[in-house]
Length: 500
Ligand code: BES
Ligand code: MN
Ligand code: ZN
Image (cartoon, rainbow, N blue to C red; front, side, top):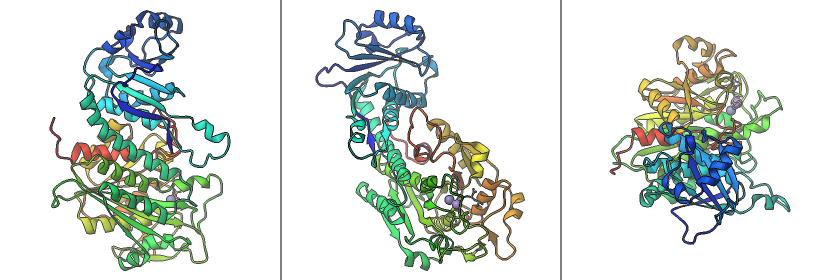
């Protein structure tokens, strides 16, 4: 991974010429810092010539503006200042990062054009947007020519009114950025490089940040009775793992928030083998686990005042002489029996045991699981919203609000007993596939059978975890979806309010 910006809050020690970035509202309204540059007339002329009106997301690029030492002046439209929310600043950061192109250095005069104060969190989100946009997965682009394309990152200074406050807010936002970029990295990595063992090693690295990490191996998983998870793994030459990550940022007695992730490092479909076209995308079938890993890194990095556990089930789904067959019946950790109809419906088998384990051991205040679970959710929602299923309206509302705030949006779909018939089995307590109709819902309905009374939500991120639309803050195949969403869920609902 490379980021093509490095960010410092505050002006540079020496005034280095390079790119200056300023913000404009309608009628070319500018803030105090921008006016001090004394480029009003130049901007006015160029804006008229280019038809630039300060519309949101529009930019005006002036090469070596007269009367300055600047190489370039980048004017960024923000639209009506009254409408500006935190999320808009996140996106503006992305737009600016892209427009800087390969400039060696830049100074961003970060302020609202209407002269009102810019909140420190909004300023930090701008910087976060810059970093997220500048992510590049180039680990395997080796050799002459390829290396040169990386270039040197742009050294960006962000000039703000209240440096101390913004530095503090940036400390937290940068930790969230670290979490998102980590999630993207593990999703982008090919399965030959990142198997269950290697993914578990990534979880282990969080110990440096104060996260307690336990990695369970096959004998332990057998002892726990996780036969649903183990059945998926049994066709792979590479053994499964269950990683448990715990962040204790609040009083020890406080019940934790729990996040559970599907970590299928590669999903071939198993004996119910997938068709060949596009199968390479199934290296990303651990995007749910990646989001959980990423948010644990974010929460620990910003020392969140909350107790949070992250549990991820790590397996590879492969066809083999020893692989699980359609018709097999396995007993999950809860004691429920599952008839395997389709070995390609493997994610729910992994989650059934991971969720049950999490609920039984930690008695959490809530559980959110994330999984690239069904093609069906892509049919329903495409790539812009994750599917949300919940047994608790308050949790559903909190996730919806966190989604709107971060841009990682969710849309609620129903859980209903009416769908149960589709997953009732002739031979066992439940079957793992419910036919073509409402596939995302029957998958969620299956998971619900392994959850007790705990408030629980399931996010089907098959459409949003990878291969999702390119946005102002993401140009990578792996989006890192879920890290900002879950971080915000914790920040807004489960942390002791910070003073000041
Ligand atoms: N990992 C896939 C779902 C998926 C598909 C994720 C496309 C991302 C992009 C999952 O394990 C799967 O194969 N689901 C099947 C379930 C079916 C066999 C009941 C599906 O959705 O077709
Ligand atoms: Mn599958
Ligand atoms: Zn899968």
